[in-house]
Amino acid sequence: MRALGRPLLLFAALVFAASASNAWAQAEASIVDSPHNLSVTGPGPIRSPTETEVCIFCHIPHRAGVTPLWNRELSQAAYITYRSPTAQAIPGQPTGASKLCLSCHDGTIALGRQLNQQMIAMSALTPQGRKNLGTDLSDDHPISIVYQQAQSANPRGYRSLFAEAGPVHLDENGMVQCTSCHDPHNNVFGDFLVMDNREGRLCLFCHEFEEWSLSSHHLSTAFWNGAGRDPWPNTPYEDVRSNACANCHEIHDAGGREHLLYFGSQAETCFTCHNGSVASVDVRRAFEKPYRHRVESAIGARPTRLGQDFDISRVTCGDCHNPHAANTAEADPPFVSGALKNVAGITGSGALAPEAQFQYEICYKCHSMLGDVTITRAVRRASFAHDLREKFDPGAVSFHPVEAPGKNVDVPSLVPPWSEASLLYCTHCHSDDVTVGAGFAERQDAPHGSNYPNLLVLPYETMDNVTESEHAYALCYRCHDRLSILSNQTFAEHASHIVDQRASCAVCHDPHGISRTEGTPLHNAHLINFDVTVVRPDPVSGRLEYNSEGFRRGSCFLLCHGQPHSPESY
Image (tube, rainbow, N blue to C red; front, side, top):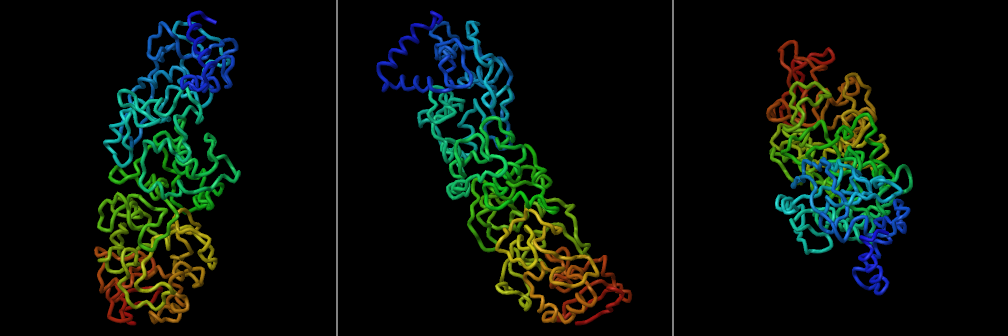
């Protein structure tokens, strides 16, 4: 034992032996039983085969160049610091207590290297595994940041925090440091945490999320069933509620650096539990279908709020679901269900909605004026607008009732409980698919993936010359009674067109709607917007149009299947 440290350490040993109730002694006892005891008596995997002193690895009573009596060289490394598009406080190079911690945990200085250049023999030169943070800290919780900057910029996202407020504390400069979350002398809670992090209590000491108390990630007691990989390899807890933030986030060595997610792909992080191993529904399987929202394409930093260069090609789970607020509450159209709580959208008027109230507002985020103008058209229409917000506008010519009840008050084919006053979700048509005739009790109305084009929930043939069947137009027959349609209750020539002429429903009807810029009530009532690959202008008049002439009456000018309508009246 070196004489330099003997007096202080001998005194510590005597105090510990004399009074186990002494607070200082309790702290020292905790160190003795923790991995930070690197001496020959240490319980951890890394220790010295010869050194019997405990404190000497970090502290020295004399000649210390850095408070608190620091006995290690400080790394001269230039660190790569944390960056995120949502970060409110940008960290600089590590300072204060964090710099001291990194003198061991960045792996640049051997664990046995002392300030006086002496070297203690060790079983390993550097910390092993996730304890070795390296000099790239971009995948670790930010340190050496001014907390007040973040709290002032987003007071609804961060709690008020003061240095003396509790176990989580800031340094003398109001900065978050390693010691804000870790007490190097006390390992009572594991990982040297300053408090128990069950149910995210440590994380929530600083971070605040609206509706977290009602969210499934806070309330669920689901646990891993043992199938596949362990979703929580680095936490001691075994259910969703206990893991809380740790269900998705890694504080150190995160795969998704910008938000400290388990993986670089947000979707892959979600799939860790939503693959049937924890959550009851295997959502991952839906995304393996040929038609799906391609959530796997979104890798790395990306804003999830509107007004920040929203990119439709990189849509991912967080664009529809807020994991801090999502829950299992049900709702009636058009209101958002619990699964879509607290997600941004675009209103029917085109305004930005920080929190969407209606499901269609979330869909408009991509399928409207801020969306992709190259959306593939399944059918070539006589009139076409890419903006679905305009098609579903209550002031549009005709539309399926997504924002407001439809304009047609006479639809006898509707299957109860549907009526002319009903409203639809987008997901009544675009959603995870189901086998025809199987019912809907075992599926979720969520547009994850489908075996049918355009993410349809059921088959809908849009090609010409299709033999009519329950299967061919199963999507339409979900709401419109097949017998009613084929018995011509609404339109005298339905059976002739669909059965005899083998014309698809899509030949005449545009299922979303016809906006005010696409047509007029005279020519485009009842969702009439012809497929121009099948229907051509009338060879006599040169006109291609439908004219509404009153209750269940109209006429057409067109050429279809070799039959001129010049006009044909009904």
